[in-house]
Image 1 (cartoon, rainbow, N blue to C red):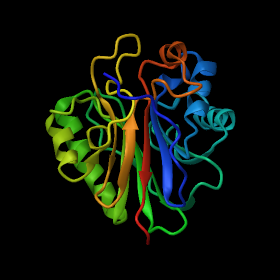
Image 2 (cartoon, one colour):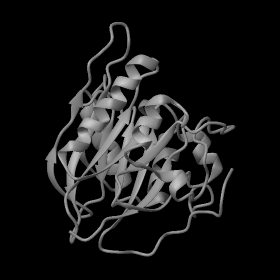
Image 3 (cartoon, helix red, strand yellow):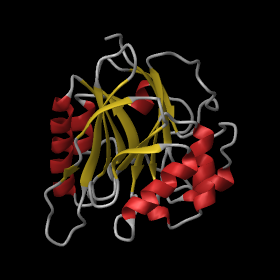
Length: 248
């Protein structure tokens, strides 16, 4: 389901465009992926499944150069896949708090890419990119650890591939403490998987109370974002959010 196509929002000194995107280790059409990211014009990009085994730092740097961003946190082995990119000059980086998570034997290593950031005129806030486990028990523990990351600052954003539906226990735990972007301010498309036939929402952007979600959703209809590129770029659809911070 879609609402009206996403249009570029009016600017503001405390407003940011944030894109969350599972890029499947850059195994698909890289040019399509870059076109989608550039057309969304994000200030911040929360990446999931950044390459982490073969030249992870080099591939993260390539993605940053190709999309007109710089690496802020995560990438490769540092956070086991999640990566945080930013448009030069959009934010001030005050600290990096990447976190490798406890690993269940036989399952993939997981982690968080987290940075403490500031925009002019606002108090510091954290942004965390995450990609949670396919195992329900391990995943719930990772939701709990996401809440621990929020203790770094009074305000925070969590974005990623949660591998859970909105009615799941972990999702509900996070939603009890944060605004779930899409139902708070639906804007664009709802479902994020799979690109050829979207039928489920497993990717999302959350923000703590005090951060205003102006709009959030899959950027169907955004100028420059074609359905062909969305299908070719990776096996998830991106989530684009616009958020505004209170004066600090």
